[in-house]
Image 1 (cartoon, helix red, strand yellow):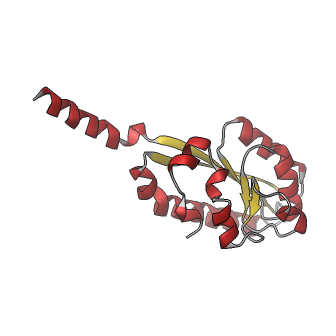
Image 2 (cartoon, helix red, strand yellow):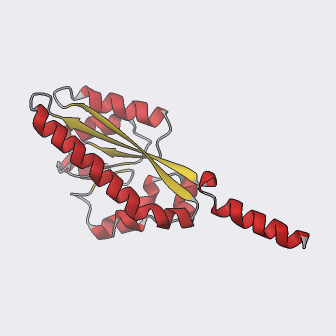
Length: 171
């Protein structure tokens, strides 16, 4: 009887979302300060895309005891150095993965701000960006096979890499 009680109790705690390991991911992107309407629209759509991705992956991650904890940071596109500063700050705050700027020149500075924190840019396409692999990737330069080969998971914390595959990043 007592064994059944502990089994039931442990089942409740194991499935409890309060015990989910938080996976901190920071999204950092530049906005054009002169065109506030376009920047506001981009920011709104970017946030919606992050929420959609988080929603689509939530149940898969929950089954493994993980939950994404996202932070969105937008900076002034006219100041490239902010890419480096924001990357450095996010790495120091413990992000497991940084999703960096889409502009190649910003992303190259960004990587210098957090050289040992894995990152990916969704659009950076300069040839220098492809030379950054395996810790720093661009979805433009990396084929799907390349992403699987490097197992995008290498971009995350070691425990997370060993125990789980983030198929939602490559599906």
